[in-house]
Length: 195
Image 1 (cartoon, helix red, strand yellow):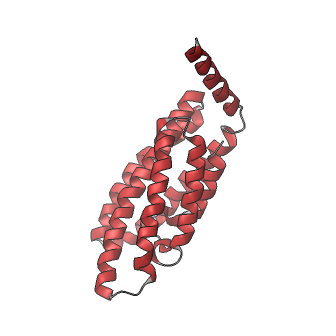
Image 2: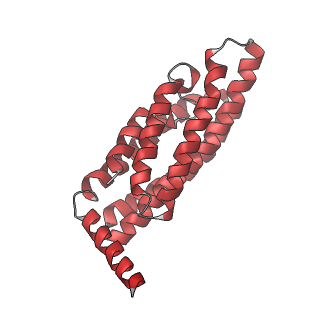
Image 3: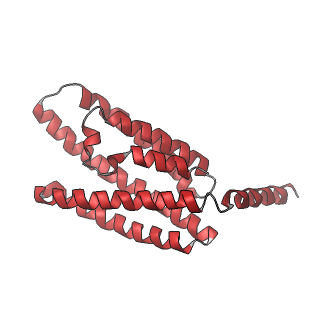
């Protein structure tokens, strides 16, 4: 269905934490590879709802942003320049990752409602709520370095919550005949158009 690729991409892109080490070296290319896996996954999922269709473009934008950051991380620059660049790039990642997670979870929520999976629906709602809290709280790290450890721990928790719900979608939605139901839905829609 596509959730398998999303799980692989999300595992690879450990840079879901705006301050992740992966964004500060050659590791950025690992995140780019994960971005391609995410793009492929959402390309397959785009027919299911508007959020997944949007995620296809968001994943492409993610790849382009990381590639634009790469020269600044690989080529040596002055300390002052790098300090400013890392701050600005962290703000950009913070905004981008909020949008990324909001659309991802909204797509999962929409799909779980459509197929009537109450467990995934509840977890998606909880994770959307946690997304607001997590990314709002991240603002404090920009001003208070003491908050970095708290945000790192909560970032790991958040990462595994998103990974868990995505994996649950892969296991439950993919293998419960949902693909066949969607195919039937589109076949019926196409037949109605021909009439």
